[in-house]
Amino acid sequence: MHALVFRFRSGLLFYLWGWFILLLVSGCSEEQTDSENLRFPDPGLTLASVEYKSVDDEIFFDATLEALHQSTVASETNARVVEVPFDVNDYVEKGQVIVRFRDTDQKALLSRTQASLSEAEARLVNDRMEYERAEKVFERNVISRAQMDSLTAAYESSKARVKAAEAEVKRANEQVEHTIIRAPFAGMVVERHIQVGETATIGQPLMTGLSLEHLRALVDIPQYHIAALRQHLRARIVLPDGRSIEASEIRIPPTADPESHSFRVLVNLPSEDLGVFPGTLVKVAFARGKTDRLVVPEQALVQRGEVTGLYIVDNNNRVTFRYVRAATRTAEGLISLVSGADAGEKVALDTVQAARVYKEQTPENGSL
Image (cartoon, rainbow, N blue to C red; front, side, top):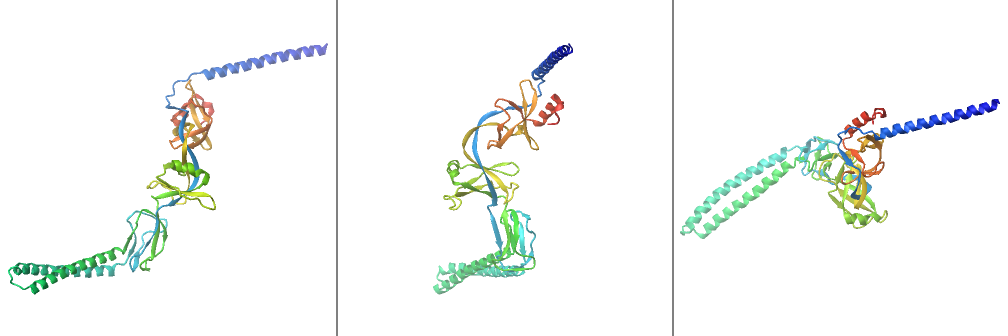
């Protein structure tokens, strides 16, 4: 009898417990449905669509930057160094003085040649006047042909002396100019070969520098990629800070390296200071044609440490934060998506404002 009563009570409790669970689940489902169907006020966000677009089909390679212009300035005179205003790793503007020599002897030579030129010019004035007077009276047979020829020769000789003196002055001026060495281009000092107080000789290296405004990327391309790259001949350089720079010129050699079977491709950057230095590791994206990719505007992407996401806005104006897997930035300035979003969904472009709206709608979700 007791066992029968126990089984009846146990069955009744199980039955009641089942109805309780069913009601609880039903209530939660209705509450969730109501929450999902809740329409929020227009958040006033600027939206863009996740969509498929035709973008460049690119292949990426690691590359290293090198200076296109690197040179060593040498001495063009024999003189003692009196000033070297720049040292290794200093930045130098084009035309700035990088070495100055003692110029006493050169300036003394210039003064002597200028004096000789003045003397020759005075002699020329006198001989020209004699020649012109003789020419007038020679027509009236006042002087002989021999006298006229002598005055003509003196006049021509004076002109030759002036030209020779002018050449000497020009050469002396160059000697003075050679005592001041200026930077041939803007860039960094790589090596300094001489110190103040040393005496330089003609041809002696003084300073080595490289240009930061003329850089190129060196890329080793496997042979099986080279045909497509030759066909399109278009690339961009992705700098370490994420900036994308269109290549100004691409040079593909006609032959591959016989040992590595790869092509050493030279990709020139635009002639400007981009804030990067030779030896920097970059990425070079070569175009191989066109392809359809699921993309969003770059400003819609949210980066929070290792988390990448988008603020999705549905038809009920509800803002949610969605984790996505992004690929690379395309040449068109868009972000290619691998997963996490579907075509046709709307994303917020102003991520700061979207985060504020997201917090107001779901304050319990934290600070994403």
